Length: 343
Image 1 (tube, rainbow, N blue to C red):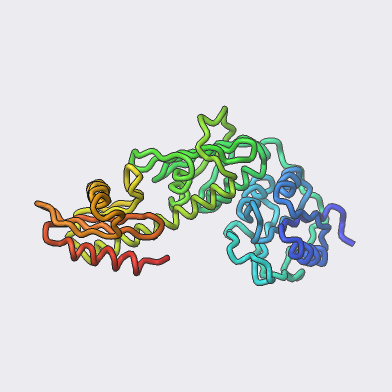
Image 2 (image 1 turned 180 degrees about the vertical axis):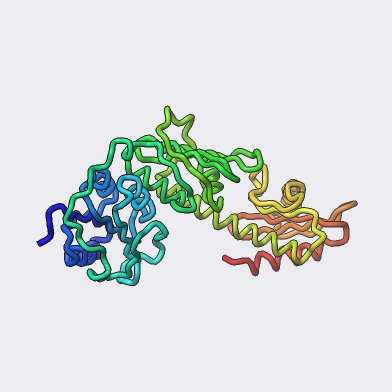
C-alpha cells in the first residue's frame, strides 16, 4: 500500500478521462486527489501536500502550462505530468495544450510504468511568499492566455505587466479579465483589441502583482470569450498581413496598402503609406454609394496615383495605391491575394 504522504493531484475536466488517468496514477503507487474543476484543483495545489501533479492536456477554462507554472512556483521539485489529448471520441481536437513546462508528457491512456514512482514522503508546505504575488516569467514559457486563465482561476485581483517589443497591461478583478491596454509604435490600444495585440507578440517578459484598482473596464465579456475573440483577431491579422505581402510581391512599386473596415477611422493592417490608401478608399466608396450603391471593387486613376479597392469577407476592405497607370494591375493583385490567402 502506498504511504499516505504519496499523494498526487490529478486534474481533468472530462470525467471519463479523469477516471482513466487517476487509475493509472493509483496503479503507479499514488493516492489520488482528483479534480474535474480547475478552480478547486488550483486551490488544492496552493494548499500543498502533493508530491506529483498530473494534468490533462484538455482543460475547460484552464491550461496545463498555467498549472505547471503555479506548481513550479509552489514546489520546484514536484514532477509535472501532462497527458496529451489524443483521440477518445470527445471534442478535444481544438484544445490548447502547452506541454513545454512538463517533466513528463504521456499519450492517452497513460501507462503506470511511465509515471514517476510514489515518493512515500510528504513535500513541505508552500511558503506564504510562494502563494502570493508578484510572479515573474516569460510568455515564451507560459503563454499569455495560460497566464491569464491561471490568474483568473485564483479569483484574486491581478495586474499583468508585459515588457519588450510590445508593452501592455492586463487587469484581472475577482477572477475576470476587465481591462487590457497595449502600446505599439506609440499607438495605444485597449480592450480585446489590446489583448489581441499582446497575444500576437512572439514573447515578452511579464510581472504579475496585486493592483490597487483597474483604471476602467474595457472588456465586457467573460474571460474565455475575450481570449477567444482576441485569438480570432490575431488570426485575422495574420491573414491580412499575408494578403498585403502577396499584393506587394505582385506589384513591387505599390506605394501603400491597407486592410480594415470602412467604418473605422484607421485600417487594422497596413504596408507603406497604407493609411493614405485607406482614407482615399473610404471617400471613393462613399462617392460610389450615391451612384451605384455598395461597390464590391473599384479601380480609379487619379492625377498622380492609381487606386484599387476590393471588399471581401465580413465587410473588410483592402485598398492600395501605386503610380498612375497601375489601377487595373493593382485590382488584379488585390483579387488574387484575397483569393489565394489562407483561410
